[in-house]
Image (cartoon, rainbow, N blue to C red; front, side, top):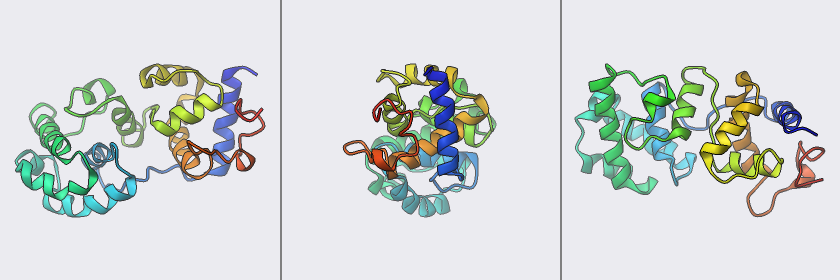
Amino acid sequence: MRKKDIAIQAVEALKREYPDALCSLDYTDPWQLLVATRLAAQCTDARVNLVTPALFARFPDAQSMAQADVEEVAELIHSCGFYRTKSQDLIAFSKTIVNDFDGKVPDTIEELTTLQGIGRKTANLIVGDIYGKPAVVVDTHCIRITRRLGLHEEKDAGKIEKILRALLPPEESNDFCHRLVLHGRAVCKAPKPKCEDCCMQDFCKKKI
């Protein structure tokens, strides 16, 4: 079976299994999603969702965060881990958004990746979830599951993104990546995948 055929079958199988392909981070606007996604690095989404209400109550937008004291931000996000680096990034990219983008979160991957602490994974999430553009969010679940499916043998996220962009229907790619997260947490786990419970077992290379 061609890789493109496997990709299409995976899209349809996951769509049936997880009809609601939603981001698990809580947010109300583009800047909040950008902040939450930066906090989620090396941290669970559940933990981030516990932290952000107080953070956003104190700093509700890029303008207020751009003026924030780094120690106060660090204290508010302490439980997310790497809080010193993350607090510096939140303030730095908020300043850039205010000064260079008129206070609006940019809508292209190229512009988003100029922001301090923002890589292609986060940039793809923003352009996909906020701006409705084709996006491929290559996180640990995406890397693991698409490799097990036989879509690639890569470890580099940039190379995997390029491969998946060529294989996936553009209009499905963003939701597909959200569904991979759900599937990775529930079934296709890192150490012990539950292949017998998998909706993709008929065509997954690991299973067959």
